Amino acid sequence: MQYYLNGFRGGDPDLDDAVPGRREYGGFAPLPDKVDVLIAGCGPAGLCLAAQLSRFPEIDVMIVERKPGPMEKGQADGVNTRTMEMFQAFGFGEKVKRESYWVNQTTFWTPDPQNTGHIRRAGRVQDVADDSSEMPHTLINQARIHELFLDVMRKSPRRLEPDYGWSVVDVTVDETTEDHPVTVTLENTGVNAGATRIVRANYVVGCDGARSNVRKAIGGTLHGDAAHQAWGVMDILANTDFPDIRQKCVVASATEGNVLILPREGGYLFRMYVELDKLNPDERVSSRNLTSEHMIAAANRIMRPYTIDVKEVVWWSVYEIGHRMTDRFDDVPEDRKAHRTPRVFTAGDACHTHSPKAGQGMNVSMQDTFNLGWKLAHVFQGRADARLLHSYSAERWLEAKRLVDTDHKWARIMSAPPGASELDGSDMPRVQKQFIENLEFTGGLAVHYMPSALIGADTHQALAQGQVIGRRFHSAPVVRVADAMQMQLGHVAEADGRWRIYAFAGEDPSAIHRLAEWLGSDAASPLVRYTRSDEDIDGLIDLRAVFQQTFDQLAYEEMPALLKPAKGRYGLQDHEKVFCVDHKGAGDIFDMRGIDRAQGCMVVVRPDQYVAHVLPLAGVAELAAFFDGFLRAPAR
Image (tube, rainbow, N blue to C red; front, side):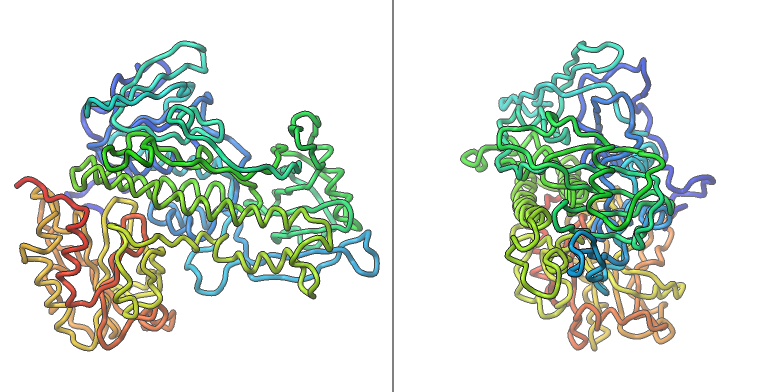
């Protein structure tokens, strides 16, 4: 972590300097008439976007929530490894690691062949494959995740806070103007219930759930089906003789249904997803009047011969499985894309719904807005044309389709009676078999963006076989040369809207010097061409170098000037740009990620941590052409 760049200041280093003229918040503070971005909904998607945009003091953000205050408990709890990598970029990954439950093993229980009325342990699977990520799969209360995002917002230059007690009821777009063309009608849900206010915005993002008014306003419709199966979920404090209660467990009984057990943070709390009644095609789960007592009784039937003695039900809910997604993620019809750019977007449950048992809802929702946030920032800062925003729907719709299709299959395998699934008939339980097949998906690591202006061709993929173009940057251990600090290379990337170029040195040490010289001085260099005159040389594109030698074999004083740039008001030298292989055996990044040792390469990484390109160290013309494809040069 770096701070003091513009002078010493005591206190919390995460607390940014407040911008003058920022908005005041509170029960009696007036709502603004105009904002740059209005976000509807303080769920994971909305808060992730608000936290990312709050890093940019020039963007005026408003986030509204119909509830009277922040969430306190319940709802989602699973944080996959990809989301943990994102949390690291926001600065609270280590805090989540400290507070959460780590899912190390998943255990599978099936009917005992000797006594089918009882269950027995049938197998175990390591939950996170070795070296699939440096981060663990964790379980933690969704409300705590909200709190961590809210903390990022409160410490931002604008000291951003949600406006609670307001719901979006309508959105209209005036295509004849560029000046705050989106009119949002808000309705008060608090002390002045029913009162309305009008706010105009440049952009609106609907993170307002499956019944999204934002989606309805732009003509979006959820399409899909329902499994007509009722499930219950409860967070409980209980005693039990079930031996694997502190492991993630998938339990299938012969005739009573299924249970999914998820231990929670704190050592005592755990969550149970319990299969309940089959629903008629025209029936809603609310008509059954199911309660937590029904769930507890069903769990005890499913888990025989073991019993659960519940001491406290912390939170519970009953739901029915449905798999639906919207036809588009923004307000521009397909036949108008060449003529219009988006002004209204939807994210999270507003555009895709599914079962919670694969643990993907909260994770995919946050990845939606992590994808959108930096693109909005680029447009507001004048770094890119608004056509860049078309890429949000193009990229995330395909990933939502993958999510819904995969979860559809998983939910039906979970609920199928023994012997009724296509995966039955082998020694391994069908659910265990499907779980193993889904490991990359459930870790959030299956996302693969297709070639576009933001994703380069795979012409030089062989230079970095383990950094797949279109997939997330796969971190590995390195040592920072200036201070011999062991660390993960991917952890240098913050959620700050900047691009990264990781230059891996080959056998010719002068190749890094030539690249740095070109990047720092040539008129065609994207650093020279697109960095604004009032920002540091790494203000948009951050160059880092990784060498094959150990730190004690490198002459730091001979490193190129661009890898030791002068920054900030005092022109202080940045000493955190140069890395090398780990000398203590944690792993060689060149071997681990398939980097060509002879030639080296550049790995270009987007602000949302996805690999945009792999190029030779001498491929400066291709590098320039890539950034020229979507960035705009600032006025000089």
